[in-house]
Image (cartoon, rainbow, N blue to C red; front, side, top):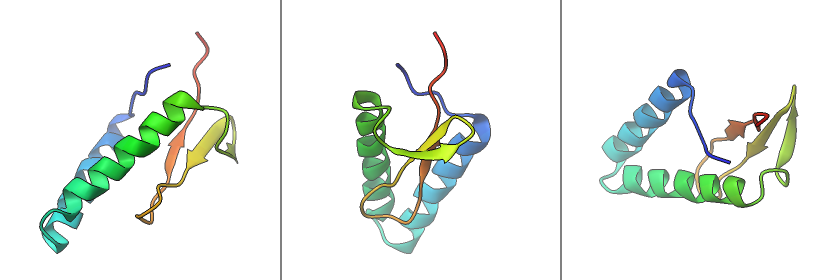
Amino acid sequence: MQLTYIEEARQELLEAVAWYEECQPGLGRQFDAEIRIAEDAILLHPDVWSNAGGGFRRKLPHRFPCTVIYRRRPH
């Protein structure tokens, strides 16, 4: 399995990193790292995280108020 962001989500992620960095230097990098940890967890255990309906699942990062929403594509 590999992760692919839709363009809107990728842009939202970049904007969130920039916003956190503007709030406090280094915080954007910490946010980005937390998202990468969530991505790694999704890749390791894609079926573990909460069902969000419609074939989607969601993973909540630990430190930041956001949600990573994803779905597995058929091979």
